[in-house]
Every structure is written in C-alpha cells, then in structure tokens.
Amino acid sequence: MSPANDFSVKYWGVRGSIPSPGAHTVRYGGNTTSLEIRCGQQLFALDGGTGVRLFGDALMAAQPVRATILMSHLHLDHVQGFPFFAPFLMAGNRFDLWSAHHNGVGVADILRQLFNQPAFPISMDMLKAEISFHTFTPGDTLQFEDVTVKTALLHHPGGSVGYRMEYEGRSFAHCSDWEHPAAGLDSTLVDLVRDVDLLSIDATYTDDEYHGRAGPPRIGWGHATHTTALAHADAAHVRNTLLFHHDPARTDEQLDLIARTTLAHRRDVQFVAEGQVFQVGQPLMLPARA
Ligand SMILES: [Zn+2]
Ligand SMILES: [Zn+2]
Image 1 (cartoon, helix red, strand yellow):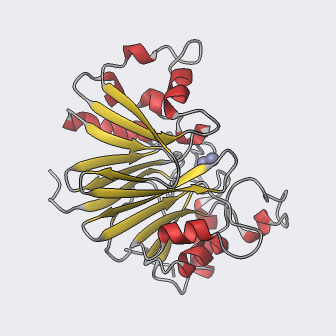
Image 2: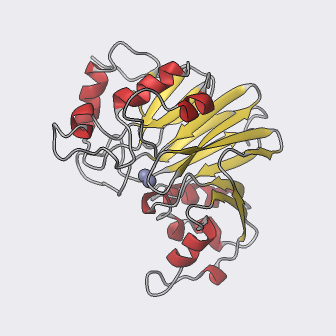
C-alpha cells in the first residue's frame, strides 16, 4: 500500500519509435514508452508501449487493479504493448483510458485494430476487465479526485499531448513526442511545464543528427534534441529534467558519453533508464559520471 501522499513515477519503457533490445541497450533499456505514476492511492499509467507488458505483470500481483491510463498519442510505439497487458484479461479490474482525438481517431479505435484477427488472436470482447474510454480536447484540465491534470497539444506529426500532473503541491510533466521550433522557444510547452518539480521530455536526437551532420536530417520528424529539450526546461525553470524517448539506435555507451560531456556540470538532468523510479519533488540520484 502506498503512503497517503506518495507521488512517484516509474519508467517501464523509455525507448522511442521501436523496441530495441540488444547488447548495446541493456542498461537504459529497449522497451517503448510506458510510465507508472502513483499519487497516493491513485494509480495512473501513461501510454502503452512494450514496457507496459512488464508493468501489467507486476500489477497482476495486486488485483483488483483500478487505473487511469492517459495517452500521449497513438503512434505504434505508444500502443503496441497493450495486447500483452495481462490485467486487461482479468475480471474485476477496471481501467479508464483517456485520449485526445487525433484526426478523429481515439484510443478505443486503435485498440479495436490491435485486438483483431489476423494481427492478434484476442479480440476486445474477450477482455474481462471493465474498460471505459474517454476523450478530451488538448488544453483541457482533467480532475481525478485530488489530482489535477493539465493538457496541451504538442508539435508532432498527427499531434501529441503533453501532460502536467499536480498533486499535494508537487508537479510532474511529461512531454513526448515533441519537436522544438526552428528558432526560439515553444511557448505552449514552456507554459505547460513552468516550475514543475520533474519533467520528462523528448530528447531523441543529438544536434548533429537533427541537422544532418550525422546521417539524414531529422528536421520535421517530430522529435527534439538534448540541447533544445534542456533549453526549454531551463526557460520554464523546471527543477529536475529526465531526457526521454531515446533513439532506437542510441547505445548505452553513447548516452553515457553525452552525460559525461554535455551534462557533466548539471545535477538536475539525466537520461532516464528503464526501471528507474523517481519521487516527485526529490533531488535526482545521479549515477557517477567520472
Ligand atoms: Zn514515440
Ligand atoms: Zn510519435
């Protein structure tokens, strides 16, 4: 049982675009987006990438499960774990899934496509959990008992939703997937995350990758760089920042190298790794960067 005012975030998947298991991603992890957020007795999940399979397996030991699932958007790397989310199969569990409508499509439509022959043998009507779907318009503020969730539309192909969760005087924001503007700052994102205690933000590319000095230019692909993500976090006076949505080709060694060089002077920033848990409002527990 969680303490009454616990506000924690656990990362079950931190990788962008496609799962990337292998010898070079063992430490930071290869599963795609899945976050577990605890606000006292309330359980939230954010997205259903492949990390949600392990999250679901952990929840099976604590049934019945009652959770609110917030969707950033519906790209495959954020939904593809749901067919293997075991608590959906079990009677007595209850889930409320929230998504914006992206070009008229909500999370219910995507799940009906995923749980469908011939792509997958289990159909939606075989799921025994009680599952309810809800939609909102980005910019809306959602209220879940004593947790306030602010939303904003982020710049990403097809759109993406950034979330700001406020609970017991502390705040956590998650902004992925998102691409920074060509010049200046994205005021929508800065306004959403201003003064938060903890922010996870898209930092898929290096500057060289983004501008085409290392492979093809990634401009317009919908993702930010480490430096642009940090510039926005700093402009918004974010207390601690987690760089998130690692490129599938990014190795553990490369992330360590960037942390030792670009981030070496910062105690308020780190690349987030699969399995890490953060207490919102607490300082980061940074690994040694020597
Ligand atoms: Zn993504
Ligand atoms: Zn995306």
